[in-house]
Image (cartoon, rainbow, N blue to C red; front, side, top):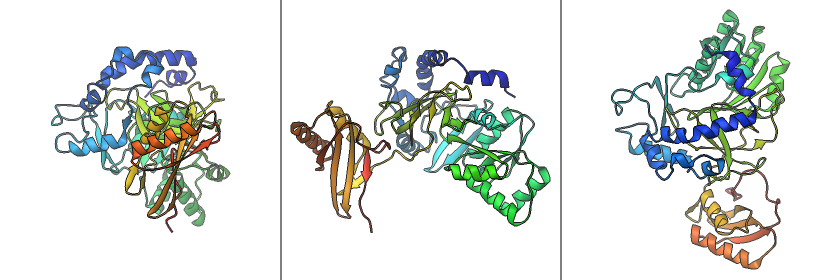
Length: 421
């Protein structure tokens, strides 16, 4: 069981102290990551000794999920992790210390190490009011994916007992709740609603259930209030099968606080360049342990940084939560257009502050318009940008000037506005 006092103290550190600790850890993190063959190749041009500032860190290449999947597929016969893991089992490159292996859609295989609370979910559970001695009804799936095991290991790390309910079997799970009287629930918010609606329909009372940590789906305020009306305080955790906990909700209900075990950046989709606070971009996560060293891992999710600190006293940064997907690749006249290509156009023209490629028209009659923000309207710049679009994408696009700050702040680099009816 973890030392709860020391654990909570990390959340309330002076931000400068946290920042210094993270910066000091970066060279060692790069060195440790290079023990994984795939990361050694990916980071070949990165010298650990040079990564001592956030400016230098932003130059470290982002690890894309698509790259991880393709490498795993290519090495399936010899290394199902594609060389990204430093743990495994005896016949996998002589490695050891993998406690479990999971399969996520793709399929992508993820290892789990033997350290307590490997996925770092305990912090989210504590913020949701879970306490040592609570009985937790865990309704995440125990099949293939790590969701249920994430919650179980976190709950056990803070001294909770877990009932492995899994998914489905509503009537059986309700009967278990009646018999066992759990204080807490883990699972998707939609299944919790199904359970409570079924309980009401069959006149079953669940007076013991007072708190919930939900994940895996959107958790709108309307559902949060619906649960509260039934005596349950529900909080959300943002986690992925690749990196574990990213951020978690607190009693302040003001965004999600970033976990102490990760570095989170919001970057412009298709690049590794951090965006200003408040601007929507892709969530990039680095986990601070060497067992599955995904350095600057692009989750493909969109979010934005919230200004200030959590009113609860937690001093780490906050994000708004999940705001959609960053993978905006579009197929135009038989050619794939990627956010990274739009980013390259912007890179070639420093006068362009932001850009958004809008694809319109009907099937087989596509047209592209690149809307660019710059300080002043300039016909020469417009023509030069149009040529760059053609050079990079092999497609023509109209270029439309927009005043600074006029493009939507929604993280979209490519907007597919075509009609398919």
